[in-house]
Figure 1 (spheres, rainbow, N blue to C red):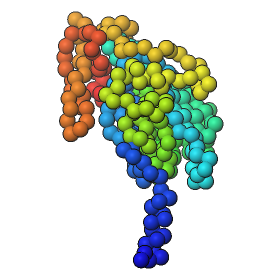
Figure 2: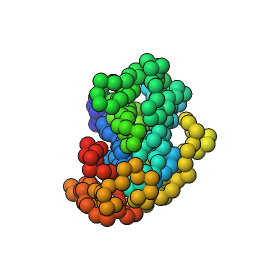
Figure 3: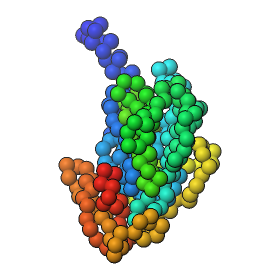
Figure 4: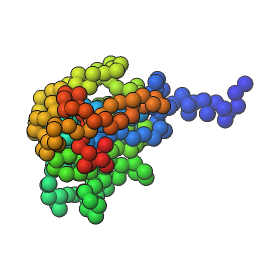
Length: 268
């Protein structure tokens, strides 16, 4: 016969969200998109998308049945072709109906102290501006502007209490991996097709939409400072410890090139 303590423990376990092949309520994870852009989804893998598109990075709707869920969040980015890579040219953030847009070289002196009820700060003491939305101890949304040429970087740290039910280019928290808007999982997705699934719709836009979803950039087109002889470091992916690792590789500029010039190694 179960003791009263054991019965209560079983009831508490039964009340927790049941997640198959995904992340749990208490998992702590990071996702983001960094110049080139390299995307990092919640449960680990990295992938690249060097096209042009307005993208939903994270979409998390507040659960009306959960009295402890007080976060509704949408995080959008725009990617722009720059030749053999793309940059994140714009970032839009909506938290509990409050909105803020990050664009290159914008004056942020009038930015609010909070966004959707969460502390919102700017660190201008580093070599590039760093914006933080504090979601709680150790949890945040961080947006960094490297330069007008190489655009923005976005990093999000959180747990299931914050991001349960979230979807988008950061992946599916509940199901794990990546999925389209209907929740259907992708297996080894073509990133252009996946981007088209997560293209920002007119009804959900935070800023004026800028691009149709298109495929990878072509080297040599719109490149700001073409290297000598049309060559620059490109990326080659290697499977290691279950993750894709980027290895720098010098080769002629062509459609397979997808990394940034050598003079910005910190962005790789």
